[in-house]
Length: 480
Image (cartoon, rainbow, N blue to C red):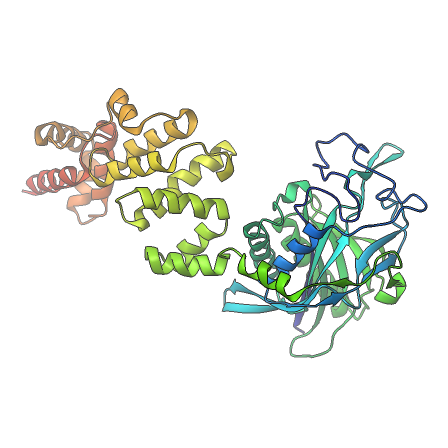
């Protein structure tokens, strides 16, 4: 019997504010900052301490709601979520429930079957917890993160595969970064995914008990956790068992989920309006002013790149997947006389290969876009060949400098002199008689291999067009 998965995602994103959600304590890097230095009576839950809303956090939350096409509610209510949080000293979390900030949004994702609309149920504000760590028989609590503004974005259960969940999470992360509301640094835990997973018989409209996989902090873990949970639940139903509704963790090393506790429903948290905070009332003109300041978002930028630069949809989506990468491409393209497709090829190819090999990110790049454009144009103008340009690019990324000067110092200028190239061609053909024989027997795809051998012999200096003509002539002469 076939089963299909039903998946919904909850995404928790820390907002890029200078101070916490309900107090004036500075927001710091919870990994590098000394523990318990950025705390006060409010964020440590001292008796009599009263919360005060962070206006900037509300603005950033509205920005996200608008970007996702949500209805922004003129009035929303903060509530107490009663649950024992060992790393939230009040013993409850201030969140939103019955009347959230925003509802009814959508996000388009790309799937194998085409573009799919994922409905977003709600976007609401809350506070983050502290950070627990464990060593030997001891547990330690750092309250620096306690009270940091947190945005929760909840989908309808409209996802149907781990790949769709990954595509949604990736698209949402890109939007948050474009809006400058979250850094997207998953390794620092500033954006975390929680997946609600159930399975049912294919074609059924029944919703079975779901499990919630908590605190997934990478796209890989998200996809693997969901995939494992789908397989686990399918196996249980296949043998006539019952899936328990529960909260799960995911052991990425083992590739398995594990039980943490029984899954709570809303009534288990005993939500009630936060008595220390009045209703949040937003002015319509203020919401409109935020809307007018929204930047160009990934989908719009992708469409513009396809239109303005004549890129394919996949090429455009690659560039717009990261705002810094999109900006860098535009600056290189603006400085280059080469076609934008050529610029894309260099960025998506050799440029990204260098970054991946060095473990660097686009934000670490010090190579000026104008210098990169100059290098690409030198290839277009046949001043240097492609292989030589790769050498120059590596040097520029590692040590900086001027492309023309590096070409001169390393003697990489392309040579079109026919006698120089003919000498290299003759040697390559003489040194590879078996390949010559295969070519003459009909394996003409070897021509490009011969071009590569000449390029290697001339250290990338030989003009590939002159090389190809000389090779064809030389090979045909040997046919006679």
